[in-house]
Every structure is written in C-alpha cells, then in structure tokens.
Length: 136
Image (tube, rainbow, N blue to C red; front, side):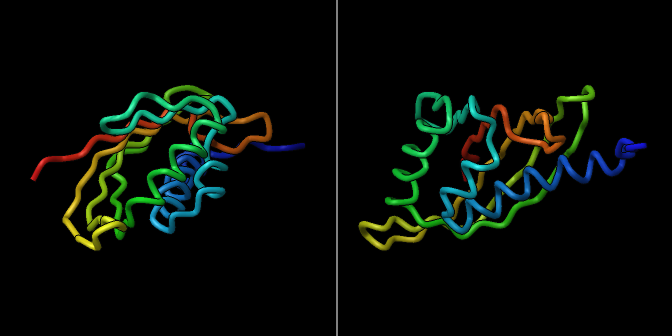
C-alpha cells in the first residue's frame, strides 16, 4: 500500500521546489531553472512580457544570464498548499547584480510568488512565477 505524504512532507516538498529554482537561478543554470517549470510554465518578470512554455523560458533566461550576473540570497516567507495539486510560495531575494558589459555591481532586491502544481509523478513544479523588483 502506497501512503501519501503527510501535510508537513508536502509543504517541505513545495518549499524545496521553489528553493531548487532560486538556487539554480543564482548559479545561472538555465537547464536546472527550466526543469523546475511545467511544460506550459509562465514567467512574469519585471519590465518584460510574460514568457510562456519551456522554449520561451529558455530564451528569456539565456538573455538575462548573458547580460547580468546575480549574487543573491533568498528567504522563504510563506508556503501554502491550497489544494491537493496546487500550492504557492512567497519569497524575497536580495544581493547584487553585475552588469556583464560594464562590470558595474549594484544592490538588488526582489519579491517572488511561485504558483506550483503537482505533476503526474507527484513532484511539485512551477506553473506560474512572478517576480518584481523592490525599489531601494
């Protein structure tokens, strides 16, 4: 008999999915970032139109990582499972961004909202991700 995860185990798995994205992003690991999304995942980033699907996501992340280096730390602020197959994570990141063309390093802070869904295999993946810059 297969037992389902306990509520706390689900919350830990949901948080781990968001952390996997945040750590892959900080490493500029495009493949690992894209792997955290569903096939039809959506990125809503600051100053950009929404990117939909893994192909568009790969193009956007390549463009971002080609021009900006990130050295960020994250804090998970909230993890909520809202149904059997849906959850959200709210986080905040802060650190520095380096303009790769000029070498200029500037402080940066963002807030993020992940909407995650449980895949057919039982893993949590990002269906929608929204990030916004926090003005200093």
